[in-house]
Each structure stands twice: as C-alpha cells, then as structure tokens.
Length: 179
Image 1 (cartoon, one colour):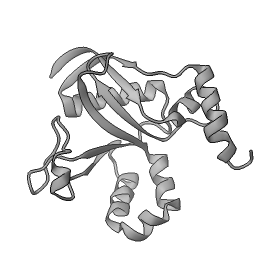
Image 2 (cartoon, rainbow, N blue to C red):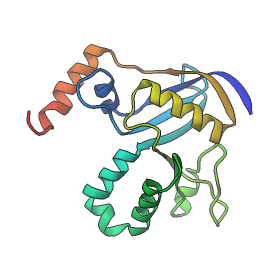
Image 3 (cartoon, rainbow, N blue to C red):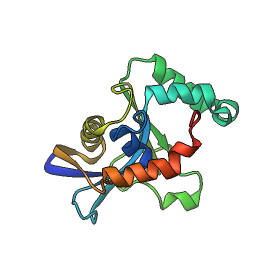
C-alpha cells in the first residue's frame, strides 16, 4: 500500500452539485474520475457510485433492465439482500474493440484474461451522495483498486453556487414533475 497525501476527484454529473447546494435531493448515482494531481494530468481511474436506494429504484422502474437483463437484476437482488456493504460490479470487454478500453489499474480479470472497462461501486454505506460520502468512497476505491492509502480527498472543477443555480433552473427544474 502506497501512502499518498491527496487524491483529486471530479464528479461528472450536475445532479450531484444540485443536491450539494440544496436545490433538490442529493443524488444516489454518480460517476467520478480520480487524479493524483490537481491539474488532472495524471489519471488514476474512472468509477460509478450507486447507492442501494438507487439500485432498488432501478429494479422497480427501469423496464429495459427488468425485461432484458435478468442476470444483472439477480446480481442487484443478491447485493440488496446480502451481507456486503460494498460490492463492485464489473463490465468486461464485449468485443475486441472494447479490449483497448480496459481499466489501467488493478482489477479482477475475467475468464478471457481481460480487466473491466467499467467499474460500478454499489454501496449500502450511504443513502445518497454528498461531499463526505464521496470522499469516503474515494478512499475505499483508492485502497481497493489503486493500492493507495489516501490522506486527503479534494474535489476539482467545483461549480459555483450561482453557476449551479443557473444550470438547475435552465436544465433540470423545468423537467421535474410539479414545477
């Protein structure tokens, strides 16, 4: 395990920031990119974070998954009703074109010897994602996949309150029921 002072995290979705700034409920599913430097030149990894609440909603409302991907639904059900607090769901290369998109860090290989192209951390530790929850999850991921013991986690590309409010009012609020 390598000790590292700071891991930098960039959150992909505006919905996360809408929740952080209190414009709506906090998100339950986000995508993050990790870097070892603030300038984002040393990429560490890309991960999806999903709460158990989001997984329950997925099984209840996402008809495409329910109808066409029974194996995935069974994995979600096993996690929801199992004893694990965290589970990693891996998407492996589907064809030769995907092989070049394997994660660059440590990860389990499939039967063909390939690493995943995408990793989703399912979590029962948190009901939604805020700043502290993301920081704790980054430390877990850094340990589990990057071999890093991270002392600090810092967010990069943080939109201002005003910028977030404008985005919320233009891009989200008009499409939410009841508005």
